[in-house]
Length: 54
Image (cartoon, rainbow, N blue to C red; front, side, top):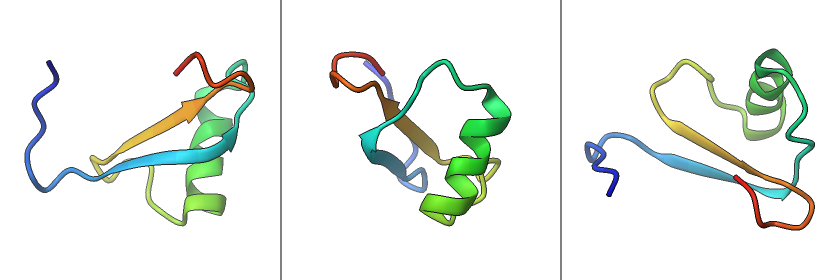
């Protein structure tokens, strides 16, 4: 079980994401689409097209 402090927010990308992308590209998605700082300490969750992998 993953225990998170109450201050940590979890963001889940609604659409499918190409999980072959680099960390820099996923960080750009966080900045551009979610409008959050990727180094904020929050969690950002991306799913593949079939929605069976995180």
